[in-house]
Length: 297
Image 1: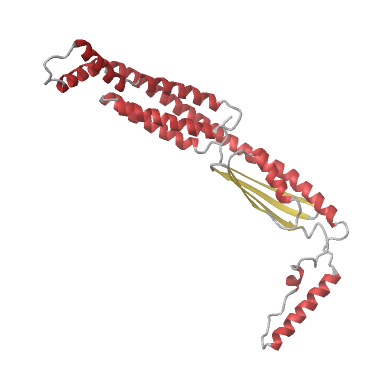
Image 2: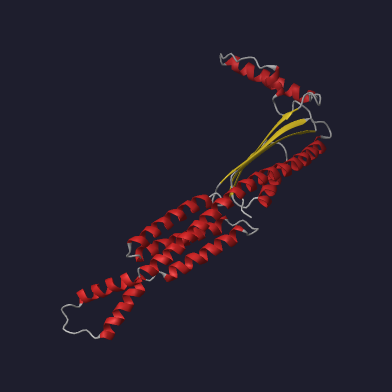
């Protein structure tokens, strides 16, 4: 199962005289980086969100925001008369102190007074209302996360098709490299023989067995059989990772590094224009695949 780290979801809801808007955004990241933008005053909201998102998401930079506004049509406002008196007395005291210093303050509006914490009373059942609101938010959050994961999965399906195509291209290039390495065998032997004879041309006599040993050593240094075998094994491993149920982004990223290492070694051993060209095409294909893998959870 391949899932992208990119996703977005939003959801609106209302309960207990409150209306809200959830938003959840995700982009790629090395680990799970969770950023919350939540209103204050709702006890238990932060750990609830962190727990729900942490259980659902393994990787990515995630931002979850919640905006809440009281639905004035759904529920009437009840003033805490005592708190209103305390706020007005404090305002009067502040105004008097300002006048003593020769300062004139702008008159506060009714909206300013209403905005002070505690002026709008919750009533005796405030804790119960908060608990019911938290439960409603939790239920809505679960649906939000499902929508977010659905978008990530849809993007992941597209990524899977792209990465599968790139693995197929790498496999084809590996087969071409194997064929080119076989074709260069006679050419490489002739070149190695000529090079060795140039090295020992000042020597009066070189035993044939010594010459064969040196040629064998040089041939081993240029042999790319192991690199081709490992590339084929990496292709098989990549396809297996695409079918895993657990998040495979980290493993795929590591595998892409191994692909690149083998491609580099292939190019360094090539000593042949055709094989070098295939090796460069292979490096380009691996780089393109790795760019896509960076978005996999």
